[in-house]
Length: 357
Image (cartoon, rainbow, N blue to C red):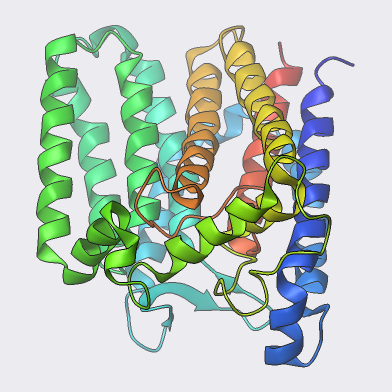
């Protein structure tokens, strides 16, 4: 019964997310699609399919992924290459990151992230005690670098950053020497600075983060509108479906900034309760990861938990103004098919590992 609490927490967050997708989107949906339930109905379908996938993957022995880890990462890499081809991948929001499958769009970077975790978990399980030597860490870092490079060609800095942070965390908790950790950290910071300098729109996001009112109708617009949503929420919020900012002030509030609308409607107390739900989910999964008998299963849980956790922290930080705008969604809550389905697949895999303990 204790193990099933994880599924209960996931179901609660999904339910809150579904309600917030409706609340945050119905004004925009009525205007854009002439159907106030447009995004809600699509998200409900994604939730149902996602829960079926969670159940399906919870029944598959996780060792099967280890057996085919190389094939999985090669297939995921091929998808990353294909999406960059004009006519094959489609452009949304300035990024060529999706395949158009008719009923929904598939984002291969989400698939690559889970494939990379499987590959690195398999690699670490075979070379755990050798990870103290730098040359044994190069292979997973190179594979990660190839994936990051392909994701940046789309470009999708947010997904690439979350992926790299998760993989580096997995490597750090091996016998990897501290001096190499410092070296990787400094190298990563230098690379991020170079990427920011090389792209004018990223520089604008940094300046907007430092002072969003410097360009209130441009790069700082989303951040300002997000803060305008959070402020009136106060302690208890304005009440469900009573948000003002979703009335065409905050652009497409059902995606990256859904937490801002949530805070406006449920206030500080509601925000703390939601954060506690996420924290319980992540801490419990990390605790179970320490109890897994084999290294592959343990690192698979660590990688997937950190992937979802880091994305959650970044999204919440962006909404409240702690981080620059990155474009990553809030797991289990934001509107979006691929992200939600992949997250629920990861939870299904982790639950299969938990059941083996």
